[in-house]
Image (cartoon, rainbow, N blue to C red; front, top):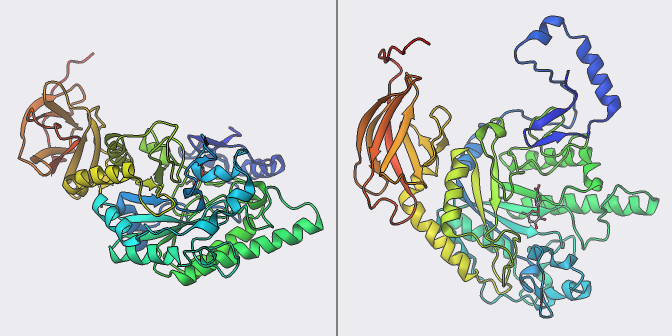
Length: 499
Ligand code: JFZ
């Protein structure tokens, strides 16, 4: 029997206490021998957990179906770090710009006084929302409080908020109202780690004094989260972050109780896998490999190589435009992705059932960076023609993946997202025996395409050639829509030579 339990292909769960493992092994030894021979047993140990996954398997309620259907979202990181934009005193910080406070070359006092200068004359939430709408985003995630602890809403529980800046107005409210008015769902980002509230600890408290402060911090965190729910009841989800340190990881019971409280107040709310650990210290996936929360939040700036890696779970992929950094960065020191690359990531994530959430970092004055405005416009242009292959589209698991790109589907429509156009202008598609044959085929936003029968292969799969016009792709990536016609009743097959 294997003793290492894999939460998913990527992360072996190592933090299983040995005493617990022994108990679990003893328990499994009492299994009837037949059970061990069952095909699906595969040596998996099921550990009884009080604070593991609350719903193994995806949620299927309307709110979750809606979230799943978005396909494309917008992330916005906006806070006091947007003022320096990755530079201070003429020096450039090569780390993520929203982490600049942790840089040795920026004095803490300088950072902690930035809020006194926050007066973003260029901030217009309705303009941001229109830009997101034109880009084709179905939802957005906004940073209410990042690790620095600065609150973009007038929280009652600290003075370190927008209410005490020259600007004074509630930023979160403006963002929520503007996006909701555009029909874009809003999720709020909230960092549990807080560098400003004096009670934050990295490790569990050791002294009485630390314990008292830490209890105060937990209450403060609970108050702020409930305050956000109370102030902005229109939100659809909470996107938690800063939950990786030992202090919070040891609070599995408190965090679980708080999650229950949030859900009781806001029954449809969507919460990702980053909020709370199980009682054995496993994060994202519990000791049994079941997802904690409603969707897998661990694919950050990363895309799975196959849908199997997701074990059927919902997921999102938060992506930065530069390689590193979410906040405004005057001069990125890392590679900046092109619109083409980002569009291909939309297709790639959607072909595996994930939402692609592209990050924007407006500057300290509230203006979107010109490079990001340009990217949003290019994506919007692509989405206008091809968005139906993203919004509400599902991954394809019963048609073999082919090298020209990615597939999604919706009802009886298959979408072929083409990124590698064959030099002969012939796109090959293979349908397994007794699955489908093509019906009408056309370019999204374009003309019908000719399809010819290309016979069968050794497996008796049916092959079809889609004939592309030479001009296809001249304008960027394109999507072919193909009606799928049921072919499960086919009787034809080649007699293969017996070998
Ligand atoms: C966190 C933040 O530190 C960062 O500034 C940004 O807000 C981002 C969205 O979230 O960074 C993380 C958190 C978790 C992982 C990676 C980066 N992770 O689980 O791989």
